Length: 402
Image 1: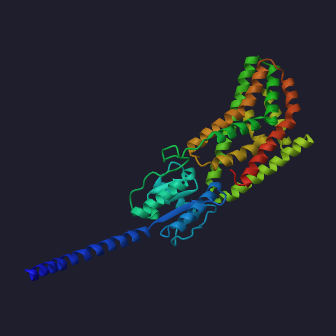
Image 2: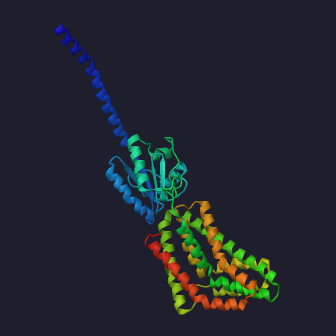
Image 3: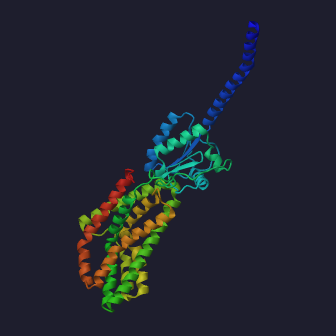
């Protein structure tokens, strides 16, 4: 009986041992498979040298690379329209073309940089935070994620809407950012640019011509036509320049440096004009006789034409402020097409307020001569305000604050 018990135990051991070994081998295989999945995690990072937020994201990626050896970060510099990729495959598209391909595939709520694509998720602009970045990387390391480039090439499926914009797509308050500073900047600079001595002079001359010929109601109609033409011309010029900024995204560093140079140079010239009480940036003298003749006709069609020509000719006065603001709008992280148009409409509304105020004063009985005397007396301080704004913008851009 004792021998039988020993034999039974030995038989059970021999029967169970292979199963236990098989289970151990299965667990080891699963562990190796999980490790192989971890080695597959790739992260694609698009940035530009002059992007201030990109400079904050770069150290985060370096920390993640040190923390997770299985993570492979592939970097693409959009500062130049050429292939600046590191740690990527051969025969790749240029950085900008590849970025456009990622955008078309992932369809994030905003097109901006910095941009990270990992697995089937995109993290864009201000929505690219340390917490979200690390969470997505850890998720892919635990569960395995497709290579984003495979998704772009159509070799994998399952792209989800990314976290983009200033919290866009992420839903939640964490990604939301207060836009009050941007709106205050737009309103303030629009009012400063609207204090345009060149535009004031043309409107005052036009209204003075009207008052000697027509009723005040006619003055109001022609004056409104002039202001509407000025605003429309100013708006469409801005829209075109923003389009040029976006079109030249491949040379964003060069464009940004050009804007900084223009802002600082124009700011210094405005301060020089304030100090010397002269107008270096003004309507070209060769155009002044034509503008004066056109204003003398004093009709609605002529007011529309005058608004167009006066705006174009007056760009040297305060157009540098507009140029700088447009550069900032084009680089705005939430700069979708609709938002850019709305920002421009807001800017041009406040840009028109000083002209509308002058029109209202003259319509209510203030003589054009009094308004012109005020304009000449305050012209130096208008130059001072414009110069300080331009120097502030140029310095902030130079330091990477905006």
